[in-house]
Amino acid sequence: MTLEERLQTIREHSQTRMPPELRAVLLKNIDHVRDSGIIHRVAKVGSPAPDFTLPNTVGQPVSLGALRARGPVVLSFYRGRW
Image 1 (tube, rainbow, N blue to C red):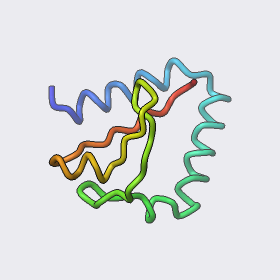
Image 2: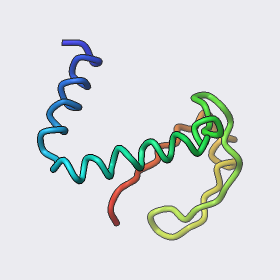
Image 3: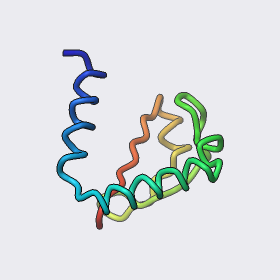
């Protein structure tokens, strides 16, 4: 099974787990985000990120610039309930 086939199976299965009224709200909000034009402002794969500094796991500041100086950097963004 290809990745696209697996993703399609996941999409189809997720539709059966969500009540129709919740799905309608979700789809409405997806359309709202798409209509906002934000998709045209999203950073593309391979585009440089602006420099920033965030605390690491022990609270020490780490900047993207300092990490870049050591070599390539992969950024991963997690979104979820906190």
